[in-house]
Length: 380
Ligand SMILES: [Zn+2]
Image: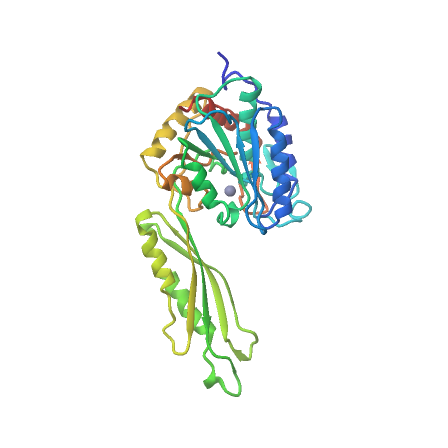
């Protein structure tokens, strides 16, 4: 019987398809661009027998595409999770990161995170469909529009959908040398605002209460929450305050990123962030935000699917390794927290995610497509 080991992989044809969607720019907030990617993806399923359903989210974000490859089968199956949005603003393709190939490296906005991986999974499925083979488990794809902004519209959809599946395969990029991802930190996102009292800094500084000075103390408090041995990191990544050099600042705001490894600490860390308060007089502090992704912990349910993937990789001819726990979150964080066997980082190898040096390795297209196809054909 033929299988993923016999089918020829045409890396050039797959790369052409990747190019087709990389050249549609789709930053998360560019609804039209994301929806154009969605339309292009829908066409890749033509003639496979899969049923594509489009689900609107909110006005400011693109739609979700659900593709049921085996609409007549209802047993728990495989959910392939991919996002269509990128972090690159419109104009990146014509500017800082044009499509180009240099040896094994192929550059383009979102090519590594994750349009390359998304296309590999579609290619893997199309090979199975065109060969007329039936997979042991039914397969469904979910393409989401908002992963790069923490999945505000997709999270509940993903959680509702994932409940009925045995496995979740996430096409996020592979890590250094093709390692897959079996553990990710949890993520929190918060906005802290301080409000003081404005005054002229020359004529009546004593009347002022500086929101900037109050915030400076809170920045240090957040810095003090860093606890590397316990896997907790914090970062004040953006700060904004004041109106003029010679005015005592009335307002200041900052955005805080929080990462942590231990699921049990989520609510404690969230409460600690929300309780932040300036100790200075006449300063009002408000904190908004939450834990946006629970940690993706390496548990038995993850080992279970990892071991099967490693055996498939061995049959293809490479050794599958998992990366050390990564700091970046993904939609896999949601499904692993629900207790579903999840493998992440199944996309292309490369580097430079979220930068203007983003590239995939052409040589990774073949083994990664085979690995994805092998998972689809072997998992049961
Ligand atoms: Zn991604």
